[in-house]
Structure formats: structure tokens, C-alpha cells
Figure: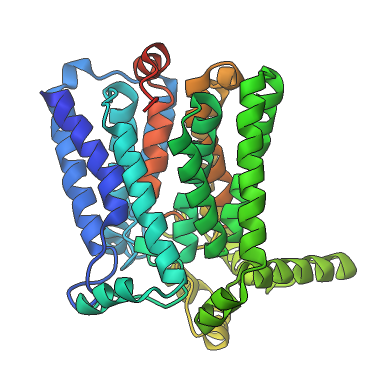
Length: 440
């Protein structure tokens, strides 16, 4: 019974939380997700206490505990202890949220078992978010009528789905695209192929370059898998994906006139062709000058320079979890005010999760976190021989790469932490391998 409740709680975290939206007139963005996460985290904590005699900790878990201890210490010495506990408003990635992430990881690693509804929930959540994103981008009226009725924030032509931001949606899609690609190549089910097409389509619409890079990098491992196995059916399925992706890319890059004319102005600005042109211009300038301007990568270089200055000021413990905005205004007031005046926005995330950790929790914490990840990935050496391991590792790789240019968010990060746990859950993986339960 305890394991069943634990399973259901984890499924709520990874399948329901990404779908949760709330009218802006009621409460700030993400507050509903945050509340559900905390409730689920409390449930998992109580269940683990009930199963305390079964708890075990290997070297990887002890590394994570060391990381967690540094988060707690950083919180204690934070420039804003309340914010470090609860998190920045609308972000909510403070100590409490990290606790939920780690509980999700641990429960997935040791207690999660396969439920035949897993694949159904994954397909439903992915398809719902993808379809909403497409409807947003093409400004389909019925969707916005619903959004207007409930007074939910949206921008026509802004493919952000239920995540509220294209970068955050792209972070989710980077894992979804790669996971369903791997599923189709290995399991040969047309549903997985269709979902991979759908998610790739909307991924291009988001114009999230960090997610594109994540998918591209993970795809290299997919190519290695196909080459190492060299089975006729696997090669055939890989070709299905490649041809489909090329056709989708061409369709979006050169849309029909009736589609282009009906798009909102924002969609035209965020179009695939404009994004590719921007990338080309940035790379051309970088090659000609031999340096990256602060505006490179939508201003990320400029943000990273400011964040590195903050890291140098307090390298050991950082400023406290989720306190980057306050740290910048406190430590670099002139740079921060200048940035706000230029962009009409402020920096509360480093747009590089690794720099974010170093700036807010400290360099030692970043080193331990990287060691934790390295230990997990090092154990997956058989990913090209073990199909289930390959399916689970590919989205992890995509996430780790894209988050180098992106941010962590409570609507996506729990999925990543669950994958980190379940990829080490041999009993879970054996059930999938032996019974082929991933097949529809």
C-alpha cells in the first residue's frame, strides 16, 4: 500500500504538475504547481519515514546528501533566508523545492515500480502540452476563448503551452522528443513515432535554441546506438525519424502563404527562419571579431559575465538558494540597474543552471553536484547494449546539455530528478526489459 501511494504521488509530480495553470487574477504564476509539489513532497517524506527500516544509501546517495547539506548551510547564511527557503516569487526553487526534488529522486530509485498506465500518462501529458503550444502559436481562437474566460496569461503566437515561457517549454520538449525517438527506434510502435513528430514540430515553434542544442547533442548518442546495433529494423526506424524531421523542418521553415498571413506579429518574429538568421549573424560576428559580444545568445553572455562577478564575491556558499536577483542588485548595483534600464527586465536566473548553482549555493556545491551526476552516468556504460537504459539516459543527456543555456523550473526539473533515480532502479528496468511493458 505504501509503495502504491508512493507511485501515485510520483506520477502526480511528473505528469500532473506540468499541466497545472492558474488564472493570473487568483495568484502568481507557478503557485499552484509549488503547492502541489510541497504536498507531494510531504507525502513522500511521511512514506519514507514509515519505510525507514528499508532505507539504504550508496555512494551516489551520500554525494547527494553532501550536496543537500551545502544547500542547507547556504540557506542559513543566505542574504535572504526566507527567500532561500521558499524560493524567488514565481520561481519557487528554494530549499523546500530542492527537498522535493531529492525525495522524488530517492523514491524513484528504490521504490518506484512499473505501472502499465505509465506510458499512457506520458503520452497524454506530452500530447496535451504540445497541442496547446501549437494552438497558441497559430492563434487558434477556441483556445484563447478558454484562456480569456479564466483570465490566464498568454501571448498569441507564443508557443509556451502550460509552462508560460518558450524556454521552459523547450526544456520539457527536449526530454520528450529524445525519449519518444528512442522509444520508437527500440520498440517500433507507431504511436511513439507520431508523438516524436508532434513534439519535434512544437519544439521548432518554440524557437528555443538551448533545447535544439540539447536534442542535437542527445541525437549523437542515438546515432552511435544505431551504428553499434546495425540491425535492419533499427536503421529503418531511424530513417523514419530523420525523414519525418526533415519534412517538418522544411514545412516550418517555408510555411505556406495562408499560414504566414494568419500568424500574429509575434509569431513572425519568433519564426524558425528568423531564429536561424539570428544564430547565423551572431556566429558570423563572433568569427569576424574573435570574441562573443554580451548580446550573444539573447544576451546570455552579458548575464553570465555579471553572474561570474557575483560568484567571485562569495565563491564558497553563494548568496543562498534562489537569491540571484537580490545578490546582483546588492553586489553589482550599477551593472544591474544598467541591465534593467536596457532590457526593461531583471535577472533572477543565470540562464545556465551550473552557474546558477555556483552563484547561489557555491562552487563546492557545484563540484559535488557534478560529481553526483558523473557517478550516475558512469554507471550507465551499457546504455548502447541495454535498451531500457538507453531510453532513460537519452532524455537525461538532452536536459543536462540544454540547461547549460537555460534554467531549472519546478514544472520540468522533477521529471529530470525522477529519471536520475529510475535509471538506477534495476528492478524497474528489468520489468521493462523482460516483459516488454513499454509496448502498447
